[in-house]
Length: 99
Image 1 (spheres, rainbow, N blue to C red):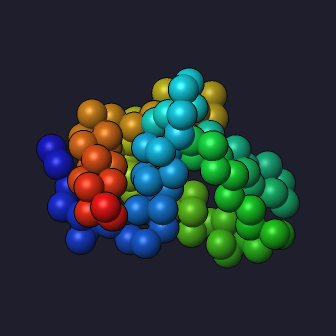
Image 2: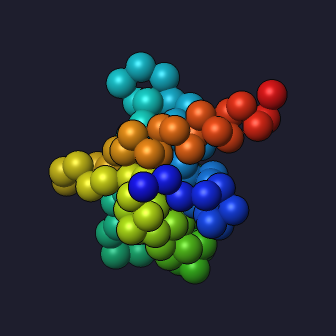
C-alpha cells in the first residue's frame, strides 16, 4: 500500500522525510519516548524539540501513530520505529520532488 503524498499532514511529512534522510544506521529510524512531563522524538539524525509544549508533543506523537496506521512506519521494539518499504518509496518521491 502506498499512501498518496497529499494524504499526509505537514508533521507526518516532516517526520517521514527526517527518518528517510538519516545516514548510516540512523536511516529510516524513529525513536519516540514519552515520560511524565516530556516527550522525545528523533527521526534519522533530526531531534525534534518540543520546548515543554505538551500540545506540540502530542501532535508529533499522533503523527508517528498515523504513519504506522498508513503502513509507512512499523513498530520495531522499545521506543523504536522504522520506515517500511512504502515509507522509503514515499521518501524517494519527496526527494525527487524537491530537486
